[in-house]
Image 1 (cartoon, helix red, strand yellow):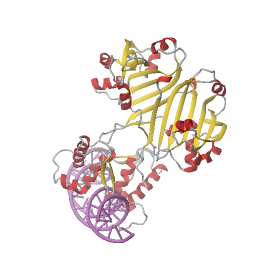
Image 2: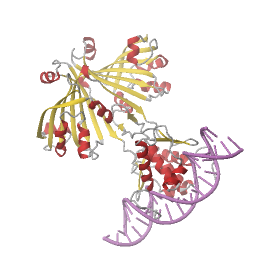
Image 3: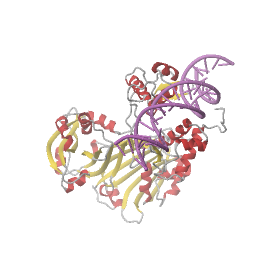
Image 4: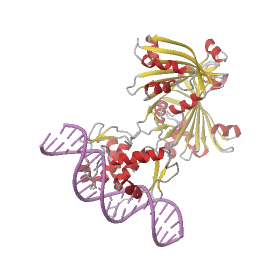
Length: 251
Length: 251
DNA sequence: CGCTATTTGTGCGTATGTATC
DNA sequence: GGATACATACGCACAAATAGC
């Protein structure tokens, strides 16, 4: 390192910073290919090792993707300040469901009509299985939530695993088919209980309730499970925590 | 690589996998120090480069930390499947608030009594400023939310910036004091509107509503702002998306 | 289709700097 | 100061993936 260490900072950091600025400023727009490692070595007069360390930083920042035979391409022109959800992650949902038991009330096979397809975010006419059930604390007693779940036909095999299982449906699908959700979309809204719902939840008609709809998507962003849960207000609060993810520094 | 490529997998991957299993199985418990790079080179008969690449993977998985002069220490004995919140991050809240205007109804300085301190997650007797307001779409018209905000005394200077600002309070604090939330805790529950609330929201008493409480915390995990918003059900749905963060594979 | 050129990936050797005990 | 461990940096060679002819 005695060779030409001028500034106090590592050379790969200097290079990473320079490239980052070039990307943020638009000199290398999204979609563009950065100079090859070889070219960068020449440009900055550094070894391939150092070049790669610099590019590794850009990769960690989510600015570029790298592929053998293709090159280093700009993926994003801004550094996302990433908030990582640390509470209520999917694994926490798992914890939560462990103390609950799902009692199945009704199962049926359906073909999605227009309204259902819109709800599920799928194609009209697709085959799904529908399940209605009640979640309650393990010991029994007061029901906590009413649940409406839709499972795409290919995974209907889990239906038999559900009754009494203290596990969320997506994890049953994972266990049986090895499918892990790549993305989970969640909508939360307030509503009031209708007569039927109140009855099944041992609550009063008109009571406020939280409706949580979750869409589980595959890597290809196809919806394969939808779960709609209805929680009487006093029995459930949704909470989560966002923590800023310290970005990998280029400097 | 012709030198001794037996399996189809990279050697660093084999080593990373082996070390990962040793950590997960408890052979290297949390807090323990892994063998030095030199020792691992000898143990697996690989070069220092390859060793470092393997350790880099463990680092990326959050399993170990590395420090010069100390060594490689086990930080965690389980791989967290990290879900990154891609929608409704703090920057999205910013977008959302841009189209809204906050009309201040009332401002007062308070000292937290026991109940308030519990709500705010702070010490009893601490000095806060309280603000009540209504959020409405820019053009005016129907109010969207009733808001109750608490700002710690040190940042009360932003109170003057709030009226009519199309910005969330935390961003006003950032602009004036340079404080960025390191963590945001959020609770969502369902409720019904009381008479006063309904009146100020131009809604009907007893209508369902979403109550969102957000605690904004500093790096030191001190609460410096709390915002409680009340949204009539039909005017607002909370939605977010969790995306799995592709973990760096060791295999 | 195979061939070639390009680009990144994997792997080794070596030397020196810096942090820690 | 000395010993140890990781960090930074140079060099080289070959493998694998990709694109284009």
